[in-house]
Length: 430
Image 1: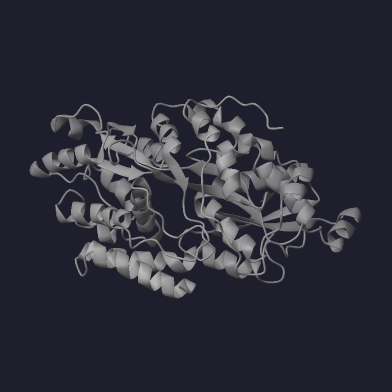
Image 2 (image 1 turned 30 degrees about the horizontal axis):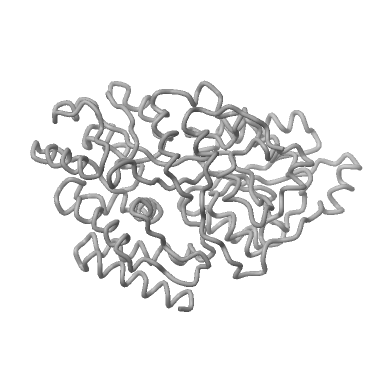
């Protein structure tokens, strides 16, 4: 039985609704069976020897991760935690190599949508039984987040962060253009962008200089119009559709018209935050993780947040987050599970995220009930998980390549979408 936990208005609606995902079919050896801690593990503990476990964590979580490791070691003197710090650009490749090798790291932080492809290849340890025994409270995890990290009812990652996108807007710049609040629809947003452009200002930008950032924005547009990347069983690409063409036209046309920055092809989310903070952009589409950074780095900036405008109303955002997973061939599973339970306690989830935790209990904390964060919670009511297809690592670069070609004007958005579908279908065997 799931615990009853009151949630902020909006998120409760989200949890009541089913979030549908495309099925992930196995291309590898399939998810691993529930494993046991290595025999050598138990012998080491019984003899009083310290066991060393590794946790690979991203650099933006390093300070909090080190604090947690030190706290855990004080309470568990027979377990030592070795922290290995990764970065956004290389973490997936490095983790893929590491967890395929003997002596893999016990724990690592990965995107929620990375879990199913890894689990399908038999690289991850099933966690439902092992984690529960160690103290992980799966009933306290937001159902949509846990669904992304589960295969056939078995959890392969414990989520600690779950969020989507929203809008940040400069109050002063919008008021000067005649707006007291952010537009509700895409067409109204374009009208406002046109007025800003006439005044010599840049309305916004697209993060097209980074593959993951760029494809995420395209997929958000695609989902808003009801499109999909692949069919449910991943046997056919669906990007040669009117929905996909409209999504890509929205990106290309706003740059062509001068509403979005002409440097969009060269920048990423981090650069866009800087441009918004220095008032080079009137608004910015990104995640709730920028709230604290804007307050700290640009204390004099007057800004508010809003939901993303779409076709006649609120757009669809992709939702994703981060979790802790365990390598199937790691050597110290019981000790690692104990540390995993500590990392994902509600109070520690709140420490690890600058957006939203995946814990229902932590979502009740005061720090997540601010005015700036409310639109992001509302936006999650029209959200879908980012693509988690088994072949996504091969599909994403194809989308990115043709997206860039369309934005540069080398081909039309319609031609780009047709090429995407053609190449992806050839790749997946159609």
